[in-house]
Length: 240
Ligand code: MN3
Image (tube, rainbow, N blue to C red):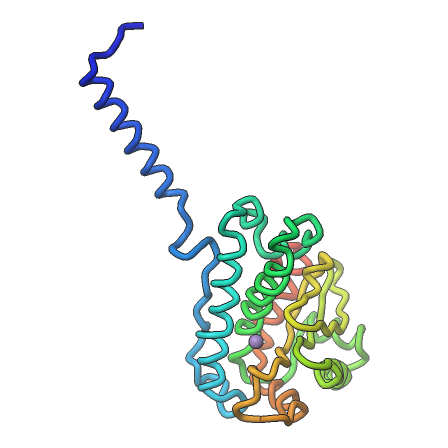
């Protein structure tokens, strides 16, 4: 192999260094880390008067943003964990490095739960239709009974948490309330939809009247979006 002159070697090294730097730059995640705050899919006043604009802004722009930032900080030195994705890391919490397990549980959970939450709101309430309505009748008896079960789950969730409906690959529905930012994703399940019963979700408008918030929330559910999630769950393509 012919030896390169010192000058050629330097040029070669520089070019190789530039190529490596470029490759690293392309592989770099977005500033701040691999996880990003999804924009609200509607204006922050879209759920008025049931969910007030200021609550939506604080909830999305500060609370959800904090879960994303804290998750990015937790996985900063653990690219193999980040690469698992939200549902992947939440379903394998026990296999994660112990030092970041709680931070991932709280913040990946918070990121997943809120990403779902915004999507299933912004609608006009009413009632589900089609196959989803049939599944609700089959598994709960009626839409009213589903609402009662979810409201009861939300009302009896002590402290902070979520009142959710889980869905499996066969389309089977079940009420699932979880504390803090826990989620059926931690059991390998999927969330059809759910309501946030942390006080930050309702306190500005409803103060301690959680039952009033739970009742009003149904007026903003986007059933077309929930139906899409139902179809995706049965197709095996629903993530968070
Ligand atoms: Mn919240």
